[in-house]
Image (tube, rainbow, N blue to C red; front, side, top):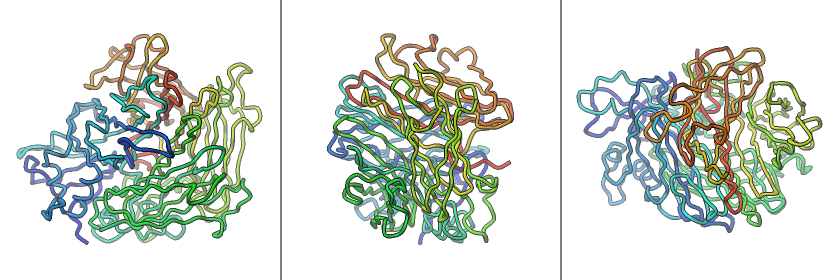
Length: 598
């Protein structure tokens, strides 16, 4: 197997790779460190479960973590380009390496100053119909040029995907002309499920394969081609279409992929082999296969999906309810351990949460009867042992409002609908808007559904495990504020300190697309201190200093305290005819599930 593009990993403040095949204007004396994010699917006139057509856009942000005001250049690789790079073939029999792609004038490339962002719709990017997987690769511009004397590190970037139907979406703005919107946060490089044949697995250990593909079911874990979708459903009018994309540049003709669907224990269907549906497929580099859950598992089914692959695969589960124009999207989440076998030492700079003796994940925002919003929580057990997951519901002041738990069968799924949890209420009028902390002795993932049936709105996000601590940041590439009359896209940011004993202080700044500070943080950041288990909510309509109809990005830097922060953003437009809501995770440069070393 020829390994020509990825020679190593950067394990410091971020996880990235090393480019060995670079364009002519890049110094040949040093390898160039890159960062990458991945969108398993960006629709371009796509139909989802009979709804649409759907049109997507991506927003990419340069996160200037070091505050060095350094610009980034990034390239947008669609399905065709990924295929050409992986197979080293331009489609006409000529060699086509990553270096060729970086020089190719037909490959979209963009420059972003520090803290700048750009929104690009599928049409501008020239994505094929009905859509495409997209990989974003970035290097610091200071690394360009034959005389570049740059003390290299990977340039962290972040991204979100927002999509709408039936009209195309422009600059991430939606209106009454749209029936439904949704989106998801890009999968960071550390959170891709790199399979055992991937170049990444060879780069981990000086050319020796460090990934045996055993996942958490043997002596291995981490970057091993195992990923999970906590909820797949075909019940109560919903259906799920799963988009599986080969995002890997490794030179194999196709990824060997299995998707295993396991029903929820609450359907009285225990997680034995005879209750699972398995679909096998081969996916070429850059290719996408769509699995219709209804065809795989039948009607009135709810459960989870496990995905295994020989190379790097990303997936999104698109759950739709056509009669209400509702859509929710969850990307796949990886195995939770970062080492790949007992024989391989832990990666320097990344630690697995297993070393803490328990697994924890955090949901910064959950609702119970909050102005019509309610929350469903879906657990998938990554272990082959029964797994009891406890849930602590916290009010906005950090007080424990209620506790609950579920025992999840081996590799199975369970769920909680918050209205069924007693005493989760702040007041009779407003209901409960709090946070949730999940804990177990075995690994798990959690999806958080937020639904307002009276207006036909629905959105979902994944609970995360890795918080930002002092000196680190959370980023949100897309922040919007509507108009004074209440119309337009509007963002709410929710930040949680999950620490049980330490406070944490953070500073929030908003930037326009050029990277310039905008009100109300153009003079000074919004500085907030959160006590243990406390939350903070920033709602853009409440920010009088932020211009109307504003599109910006946000960076939250932790400046003091022993706690950490995790965050999520809801983005809602009630003038959309149907479902006008989506949710984005705020992630640090380590991803949502990997942890920085000391």
